[in-house]
Length: 140
Image (cartoon, rainbow, N blue to C red; front, side, top):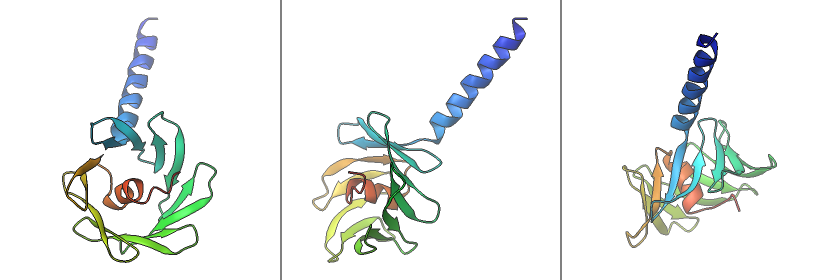
């Protein structure tokens, strides 16, 4: 009789660990969590409240499933009006709509501003998603 609850407990623990491992953390410069992106694209704030989602087709939606932007394959980031607001170059450099450098997402996930001052870290987060979160916060 005790074997069944034990197995159920172990399965629950394993599922929880898998879900936790699938989350990609967004950290501020003090290494405090300011958000997470789950493996299904849902974006959570520091309080673990859903603020939106990165959809597999490149569209970005808010918590009410309303389109707030888009990430295109070429690194362009568009707003809800389909206007380009920025771009992420292949080296992680983030530029605004006027091609002015805003900062960079380094290969190790650290996010720096145009003066190379650390803004935070996007741990295991795809570069365009990190750019949307740190430089073009569409989730406000």
